Picture 1 (cartoon, rainbow over the protein chains, first blue to last red):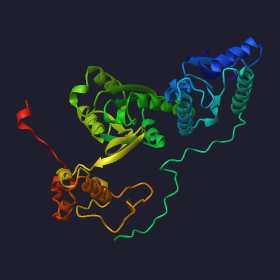
Picture 2: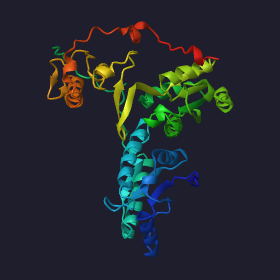
Picture 3: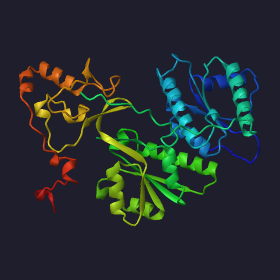
Picture 4: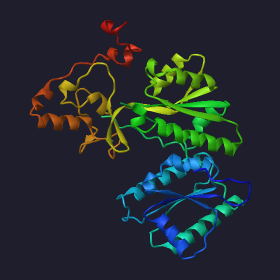
Length: 162
Length: 224
């Protein structure tokens, strides 16, 4: 999974793609001679349900600037609901990224069907531009995640003993 | 099993950043099942610490290792001892028992907790764990149709219910807590044992619980 992380200003994007949809869409984009950024390093998965939280975090540890998880549309998963599970895990991973001070927008889930080659190319362009923007400092300062330390105190309430 | 949940990352990192080399020690039993401190969670936390250290400019080397149980001396094998010796401090993802026992086995090492230990519970559904036992030291489940009034009644009443029971819910939080005594009543009715609830229960001897100080079980026949 380790990408060739060279010292340059170009973002490195890891794109986890489901074999049954987004990977095929990426293939179709190529067949259709559509252009999309070379920043993407595609990792083919049997299903986005295979993408666990640490797989995503590890991509960042190894130098990725952004991570896309590209799965099937809701209701189209070859494994029934692997994509639904993946969206939940991506949500959780975003929270973990925020905790360590990384903008959670650097991680996104996209639904891309096998027939949507143009959509794959479009999402790849959009996401790469977004990450480039974040790297160039156009990102708003992120707020720290709510923790016990910075959460407002609960309102006290009286007990009605019986 | 013992149920725990991950500590807020900020708290964990505050301890970790005092050291150059940290070993995250996962536990392969209860906290693995409740997804708080097993090998997977150790990996996630190692990644989080590595990312936070990079963001904050700290130099922290993180190792991870998971053993079957941290509450049994035999699982701290040679490989584990070597990894612990090589680290400046250990971040144990075991329950409070495991954290303390690890520190007992390696008294010269700083051992930090990575999870908050919550209760003795069961898996109600994937991702949901519920309290079922309070470890009072003298089981009363035989008298209450197999539902524990100590653990499942907010007031631990032995002669319930109280006036805070309404529509089967507890006044402490009607949206999420069922009245333990409603559950007991319903179960006893189903078992045809309702008349047994007429009997008043005497005061419970709490000296078998936490009120009697730290507890110990000794089986002379099992000792070497």
